[in-house]
Structure formats: structure tokens, C-alpha cells
Image (cartoon, rainbow, N blue to C red):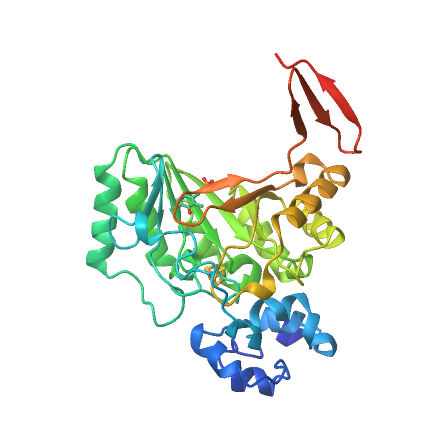
Length: 354
Ligand SMILES: *Cc1c(COP(=O)(O)O)cnc(C)c1O
Ligand code: SF4
């Protein structure tokens, strides 16, 4: 653990190159690293770098998420450039419209960190710039022209990387569309760059009429450091309902104790676990992938141990743009003429088939 200044993010900039990682002692030598760095931008905030245990770099759950690895060079034939089919569902630049009642709006492609397993791995990065003023106007016009759009989900990139003034303008524009009832934001900022959650940013999130929900992406209890918990408290105290989304990742959180600690820590920080995402078939991320059977076994174990408040829904984004579905485990066995329900302790019970 580093000193308090670095911990608070005052003493070190975001690490953005192999050289910077090397000089911080965060890199394990591998001849394939330049290729990994080429395939996806690097960024590790000082807060996250300070959490890394340098004595066990190879299996540190924070390092594993953000430090490039030679394993990213291994691409299997099942892996896809557009793993969840965003392209196929994009009617105008910056919009993904897959479900009738809600759209994704991606105002920018930058993030505070670059997660090596990212499902938009081939889209995020400092090279992909924000929507231009005209493009954003066209995206808003699309939303305005579709009365069935009830919810707008700001994602990216990371929408909380917008300057508070620009975010406030965007929120106000959405607030002014009468059929938009909900604006949901998906962000990693409160977790990995908590000092960005300023009073100005919190104010920008409260435009007036629409209901605003914030989902934070968090994969390990260690990410909930004191400054991060303070940032989440600022958001919750401002009245924003908070949800958690977690990606199930081998070597990061694929054991029941780690998931249990994470879910308890989220609920304690007033963040309701929403989704546990099965990892997508992203190119070069095979080293993060677990099987659906393993994911189901973990969910079953969590169900037996944890408050309902702390239970996420385990979901798979069906490749090809077909949307998300819960993938169990199922507690029902469907025999002809009878229904068997399994309880969380493994007991079997008959239930009238109805
Ligand atoms: C994930 C996603 C949503 C949101 O789905 P919820 O189940 O409502 O969280 C909406 N649109 C697209 C295109 C998505 O990928
Ligand atoms: S913050 Fe989200 S969008 Fe950005 S790299 Fe990480 S997973 Fe991808």
C-alpha cells in the first residue's frame, strides 16, 4: 500500500503506458505486451494503482483487471469484435436501440480506466472521441421522435467523464423530452476515480423531472476503498438510487467468498446489486472467462448465504444483439405431471404443477 497522498490521488497521474506501468513496478515481463497495449488503451487511476499488491502481481484481482497481459494476444475463434451486437442495433451514431422502451446513448468513448476484459474493448479509448455537437443533436432528435422510449441509458465509454457543465446540458435536454421518464447512467467513475464525484457533478445529475438512476461497475470489495465509499455516500445522500453491476471474471471474483464480500460491501454502501454479467466473448479475454455452469454454482452458493438485498441477477448478453437473459441457476425441475422445487440447502420439494 502506498502513502496517503497517493491513496487520495494527489501524488500520481493516471498511468497510461507500458513504460509508466513498468516504472511503477506493475508489469510482468512478456514479449506480447506491446501487442496487448496496441489492441486497447491503458489507463489505471492512482486510486486503483494504490490498491494493487505488488508482491503478488500475477494474481492480484485489481492488477488483473487493468494491467495489460500477454494473454490478450490469444484470440479464439469463438471471440467476436462486436460481442453483444451493438452495431446491428444502432440507428444513428451514439444510439443502440435493442428493446422498444429503452435506448443506450453513448456520448463519448473515454473511460477513467481501461478494463482489459471490456465488452466494448474495440470501441473505447482516447482515440474514439465524443459525439460532435451535430451527432449528439441527431441522437437526441432520434429519442425525441420515438415516443416509445421511456428510458435513456447513458453509457460509453463513461458518461461521468463528461465535464459537469456538459453533463448538466445533456441531462437537461433529456429532461425536456416528455416521454423520457428515466435516465440511467452506467459508470465506473465513483469506484475508480472518486474525487471526480464533486458537488458540481452531483448537481448535474439532478435535472428535475426525470427519475435518475446510477449503476456503478465494481468487481471486487477492495475497490470500495474509503474515498470510493465517500463518493458513493455523496451520491446516495443526494437522493440518487444506486445499483451495482459486476462482471464475473476468472482470477478476480470467481469464488464465493469474494463475491459474498463484494455484494455485502456494495449493499453497505447503499448500492443494490443489479447484474452479475457472464463475461462476453470479447477478443483476447479467454483468460477471464468462466463457464456458465461455474457461474450458476456460484449464484446458488450466494443464494444460500446472502440477504436477498445483496443478490444480483446472473445475466448473459446473447451474442449477435439479442439482448440479455437471466441464466440461472434454475430451482425448478419439470417432470411430467409434477414440479420439483429445490431449496437453497439442496432439499427437493413437490409443488402442484397448476
Ligand atoms: C444492457 C442493455 C440495455 C439495458 O438492459 P436492462 O436489462 O434494462 O438493464 C439496454 N439496451 C441495450 C442495447 C443493452 O445492451
Ligand atoms: S469502464 Fe466500462 S466501458 Fe470503460 S473500459 Fe471499463 S468496462 Fe469498458
